[in-house]
Amino acid sequence: MKRTKNSTDIKQSGQVKSSQVDVHPQLEKFVRRHLASEWNQPLHPPTEEVFHSLAEGDVFTGSIILDSGCGTGESTRRLAKLYPGQRVIGVDQSLSRLGKSGVDCGVLRQDNWLLARAELATFWRLLHKQGVRLQKHLLLYPNPWPKPGHLQRRWHAHPVFPWLLALGGEIEMRCNWEIYALEFAAAVQIATRDTVEVRQFQPEEGVSPFEAKYLERGHALYSVKVPESVTAAFRLS
Ligand SMILES: C[S@@+](CC[C@H](N)C(=O)[O-])C[C@H]1O[C@@H](n2cnc3c(N)ncnc32)[C@H](O)[C@@H]1O
Image 1 (cartoon, rainbow, N blue to C red):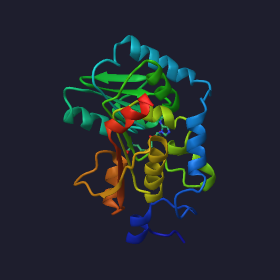
Image 2 (image 1 turned 90 degrees about the vertical axis):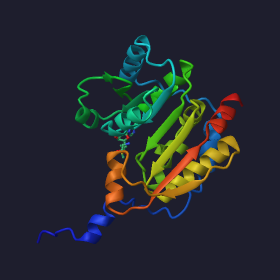
Image 3 (image 1 turned 60 degrees about the horizontal axis):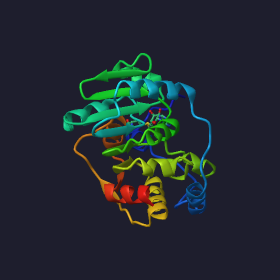
């Protein structure tokens, strides 16, 4: 018999299910390892192509807000309205998500915002190499990778984490899995020796489709903000 969803199922769907009940015991080891050694994985060629076309179009000058993993780009457009004097760049690797905003190949550019299809671990390294310093950097609802064995796929335990911090600006990561938020904050503290807080919050409306969905389902939402002063000090060190 086909099972119909009751309200409890609906509320719980999208909740992260994991056998992990606390911060991963290997987190510190991986963060320290990534800080101590240069990551040399080859760059993703299609992302390099998109990046160089943007650089030629003078996109990386002035004050930049980066919406990393922007999905459909809805949050990018909202941020562009909120910060009319700045350029908001949304990046995602999924053409099916970006396509909902009209991206049909690599880039869609309008007013003070643009959406680009690119792979972030390459895009962040190229931004850094280009000398770009961000004003703000948003990571809204990154893929949680809930299996303990996938720890290194979470951004804070990924080898690209030092580049993420070195891009500077105020970083804000939002998610609906408390452990991810606690790990993100712990990784920032290991890397910078500064303490950042995990804050539970409840916006009136969702800035992105995932935030809106989780709000509607009554999930707890968590935010970790890394102040600009902390990322700037990390870069200098
Ligand atoms: C859970 S969705 C969140 C989307 C959006 N930020 C929101 O809140 O609605 C995570 C997004 O990150 C993107 N993503 C994950 N890993 C990525 C990577 N390495 N490079 C680019 N995008 C990535 C996925 O394609 C997906 O759109």
